[in-house]
Amino acid sequence: MTVTTDGGPEQANLRPAATGVTRRRVLTAGAGLAAFAASTTAVYAGAIEPQGLVVTRYGVTSRAWLAGQKLTITVIADLHAGGPDMQLPHIRAVIDTANALHSDLIVLLGDFVAWYKFPYARVPDPLWAAELKRLKAPLGIWAILGNHDWWHDLHGVRRALAEVNIPVLENDAVLLGEKGQKFWLAGIGDQLAYPLGHGRFLGVDDLPWTMRKIKSDDPVVLLVHEPDIFPHVPDRVALTLAGHTHGGQVRVPLIWPLFVPSKYFGRYAYGHVIERDRHLIVSGGLGTSVIPARLGVPPEIVHITLGVA
Picture 1 (cartoon, rainbow, N blue to C red):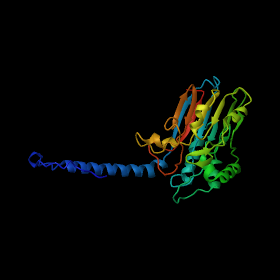
Picture 2: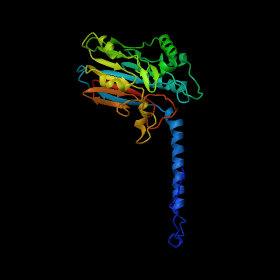
Picture 3: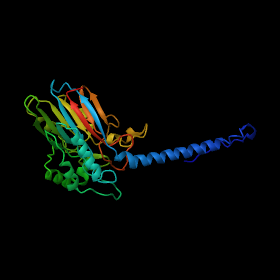
Picture 4: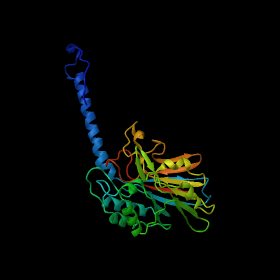
């Protein structure tokens, strides 16, 4: 940062000699403090916050969910295994924390692998998948794929999940639960699967086809990777779960919504969104993308109680 003064004449006789304070010294000191704060923030964002882990809890009541029906869901999104912030010890901590929540259902919202333009330490697919295999939930572990899975390791991710018996829902739905507590779990294909250049993509998502797979009036929980599809989700879906945005990942005040990977900027960046009595929860995710840094959005596992506010 370059600091300049107004270049006006100094009035030494008016300056308190005991303090030695001048406008130039104040500005220089301020610049130094700003540089120190910026460097400290950068260290925190790159080396400390990405290594953390929090559990974020939501209670959701939806008119599309049956009264008296309760479901607990653990959400793991954007693992991005590999890189400086998601090596095996961190992945193990994620799995241990998720299991300790004892949810009825665990869902994995895609982007299982990390990818950066600089050299980094990869975690081989069989290793992160072996950790996911340790997940336990009475209604099972279910996955969808994300854009990074499609762009960088599609066959490897598919094979890894298949080898640990974690089913992938792609424009499909499955009926889960006991009598009187049944619901549909649906998942769509990725909306950014094929980059076409100039910010354009061809998706493999088919929401209408997925909804046609639902053959009863039981309520629906929908898994999507990118939240941008939410305006098109029908009213009968009780809850839509998404990842992808990392909550903005680096929340620099005022400007961070401009960098959210969404055509809606900050509208669906993070948290519990209610529009027209329809519910969306966007996870801040776990790993990082593009740059290995997080600020203001620590890695999180989401725990939801559906049916209880």
